Structure formats: structure tokens, C-alpha cells
Image (cartoon, rainbow, N blue to C red):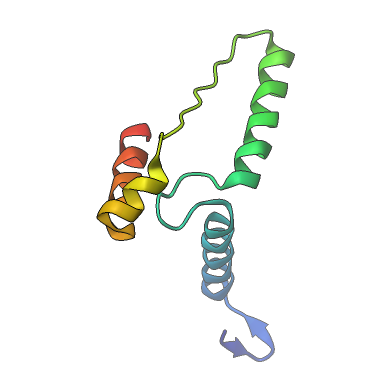
Length: 93
């Protein structure tokens, strides 16, 4: 951060805000899939239910389970398992 006569430039502030925003995104999302992490999912879910209830509008929730995923990792490799998770995340997005 550059200071001129003790002042911080608008560009420095903008850069810091972008950095804070990106850090916030990293804290809320899974690094592999980019989907919300467990804690962020529950926060978003609660907010969505509250919003839907206040507006008296319907809401839906899709829950998926990948059966025997642990076996996929062991049989084919964790790298292949990561590929499968990323592919599923892309489809869900």
C-alpha cells in the first residue's frame, strides 16, 4: 500500500476491498469444487428459508449422495475421485 503524505490512494483501497472479497469467497467455498462449504451451506439455507417464509413463496432443496464414493477413490485413485467431484459440481452449477 503506497502512502503519499500519510494518505492512502483510492486504488489501494479498491485493491484491498477486492482482496478482502476474494478471501471471503475462499473461506465460504470448497477449494476443489467451488461449491459452498458445509458452514456456508447452512447459513445460505437458513437465509433462503427465512426469505421464502417472509415472502410466502415456495422453496425447494435438492440433496444428493454419491453412493460408495469412498470405494471410487480407493479403486481408481483420489485424483480420479476429485475429477468426478469437479464434474458433478460443474453440472450442479
